[in-house]
Length: 257
Image (cartoon, rainbow, N blue to C red):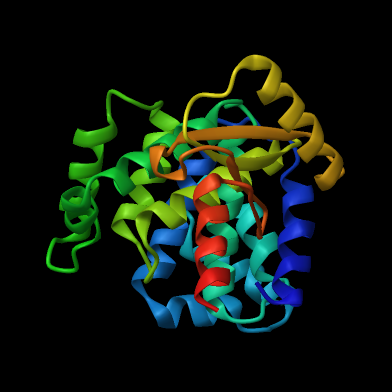
């Protein structure tokens, strides 16, 4: 996101606070879906106009939504965004945050769903197909994940399936997982290991990463036998690769040189 969009998102997220009104997250996703379906609508909502004019426009356009949801949408659309796409992404982020307030394990569910998608090329193709109508893809998502995740997580998954906006589904789900974690006060660290970490090693790694991030870190561990040994960590936008496979690859490069 551009700096203007980041500032706007942070401001509206603060206004969102710890709202617990049922259905707000779903309503925000519904609004984001309308924006995804119409570029002209997203452009109109992102266009800088007088605050009262934008308030009247949003309230009229989304009059079937709850007052709380409309207030959040007004707060978002009266602010400056780098472009319409980032406004829509911001509304999606606010929806995920609204769910996370009452769902402490939302990040785990979304990350696990991303792993399921990555593990099945056929599933990824079907859920990401442009030849399948959005409602049908949403139904497929509910069939695949319906018994594996909560209703709140399923609503988010179905949204990103229906409105990919050029994103890989697994990438969108991981971004949503990080957003949920941030809302609940910690950073996600994606940890790949050749075999399961014991509790002592996991605790030490978590403590070390928390010091690097300067805030609490939660580990999301994935078993990857191709690493041979060691650990590969993705923390925010940084990758720390201490796996044996990486060391061997570096050694091969040195020998080749």
